[in-house]
Length: 455
Image 1 (tube, helix red, strand yellow):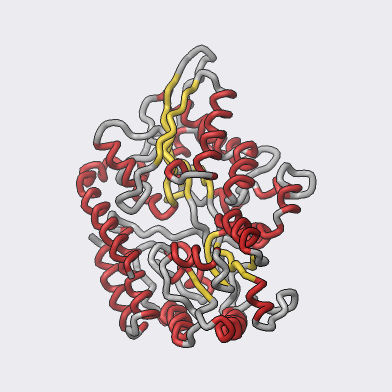
Image 2 (cartoon, helix red, strand yellow):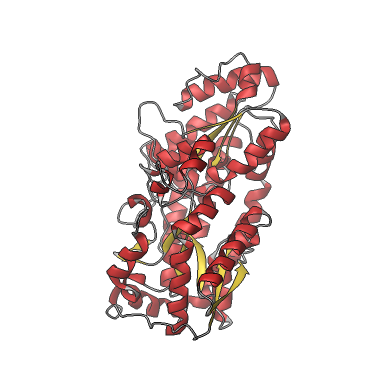
């Protein structure tokens, strides 16, 4: 697929750039394993002016994303008139959120705070020297940041932890949701109010009926195409497979359970119900009312609500389907806020910004304007600041429910983590869409990925 070739090129650029920072590895690893004891950040006086920068991939996304983040920066500066924040759109041209930080670090101008995707966390720590917050602010400081009237969800709180230390504040993420065009179901004689979509077999049964009416695939799944690595991990785990061993030393997506997971979608493609489309095409086709079922991040909620309203069709959302009687294991997408400041005063200002952007105030904006999960999920309980919003937006409920059984997005070790994802996705696409044998293809990919994580 065209998307695969483009992303492979980006991954290669990132891997090449990573070599420039190889000399930083030893110092960074020492920081993560034998750093100095926790210390207190300086207290900034009200008249002490500090300039800091905040790098975010949301600022590279025009419209709702940029407007929401800029409004939060303005509110933070209003509350902290002595701290001035430069919002930087993240450079993700090389395929990852650390690529821009890497370039700026080499140029001597790293961001003070950056939004880093979870699967890049180990690289940010070992290569880019992200601050160890456990040591910088201590457990008391972390407890304060994560606590309050609406504390962080316990599953979300640990997502930016590595080797027993916290390196970031989990910021924005979502879980994979089954989006449904109920109008197409009705056209196929299916009652949306009673249809069972709890398993992949049930979804396939309904999709076949819709495909028979529309003459085209009724199901699209972003997990099985390039770019859906976090989502595919959810499918693997829900079918009893892992991509990496618990000790982070062995690639496991060549296992029988992983092969069986891919094989199930190969069968759906052969049956004519699974679309062979890249992510952007899937989103466009579902938005235009051409597909009945679409698995994607919940962050598209506002997009799909507007598309359904404008297109005159009815939208609904369900949790991720199960593989038979096996429990669904939702995996999160998204990112954490990590600190790259070296100057103590900038670190103090950066910490204030990080706390604000993960505060109840921030999540009111992030959730209602963008659609990400409020990681302080008790805000949606009766009497909470997001209770009325949830009542008016019931499509968010499957996403919130999946937060309670969340499993972290697994990050591959080493500097070739992006290449590992591309090796896997080439194998998945070749197996599902290009007629390759899933077992031989995935096992070969696992062997290649094992070499990559050992380099």
